[in-house]
Length: 169
Ligand code: FEO
Image (tube, rainbow, N blue to C red; front, side):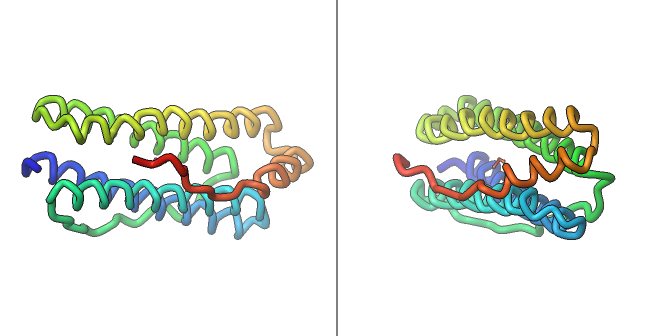
């Protein structure tokens, strides 16, 4: 594996681990305001991010690269309300999408076709990630912080569970 590819894939492990850290921070915020369903959704989201980091880890190792873990930055601590927290999540997912697209460009430039194929899963995954978060942002915008509406969404989000995809490469 070329050094440049090794470097950018390692950076993405940091991005995915930071994502898990950010969602745990948002989860803690939801716990602090008594919304356990929202908290559960963020917990599952953080678990998915660890799964993403693991996929990058395995790919680098499989291709004979070396893992280098770097410091994970501190996430925010406070959000104005649930809508604010979900808007921050959406912004973050958009950032991750651009990271993934950038990785695809680097893989193309370096003619690393196995990495390009590997990244396809993430290109699709990001479409789903942004869509999932957008839908919740829309619901929260609709209810405008109304207490009853929040509790209804909270109940809905409490049922999310983490299931790792089965047909992995
Ligand atoms: Fe790993 Fe939420 O993207």
